[in-house]
Length: 153
Length: 129
Image (cartoon, rainbow over all chains, first blue to last red; front, top):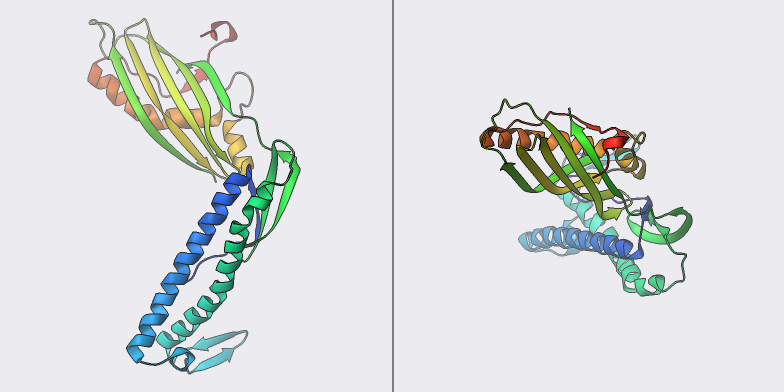
């Protein structure tokens, strides 16, 4: 199931065979977050321009009711959705800032002394790179080669 | 379930004898090679080459390209590992199955016997390339 708005954020460990691959991955994450941030900003911006109002005074839907463990809004679906997009936008900003910080200082990680052929685990929490584990127990596999003479049957 | 994508980059078919027809009795030996192109923890891309020679020497077919496997490390490993010295790695069987249609069509157009749809290892004595 794909979300209609917003994106999925990984919490877990992702293994890499090189720090170069990890850097590329973090760059791709940052680009995706940045695109989502821009997209949400545009949606909110156009709504505010249309209504000629500012900030939260327009992006505050009425009619939220707590049903069990969740809030439900059937009165103002459009504004309710906008309110949520606005919240997600605010949550995305620190995610972008933190990921950008990790990427900017990644040279320091690349200069760490590590064992040859070791692998690297990137620990992500809600899509934000938090830790790196240098794993010398799981090594990079040798380069794969196969050659043989077979027969079609 | 790993995802396997095959990209064919080159196909060649050669008719080596004027006397060859689709019905000429022939066996194909297949020289295969797989070599690593790119590897990540959940992705492996391999260049492949299948060089099929008809015996007697009336035809030759060549297919090259690359295959990309996306899956967990265990799933990728299972596809490239030989069960024993005699068997081909499962990914090779998959490649052959996927390109077989192409080989069949080219064989028909060239009026040469088509290779069979499966591949097996040759006995050890015949392995020397």
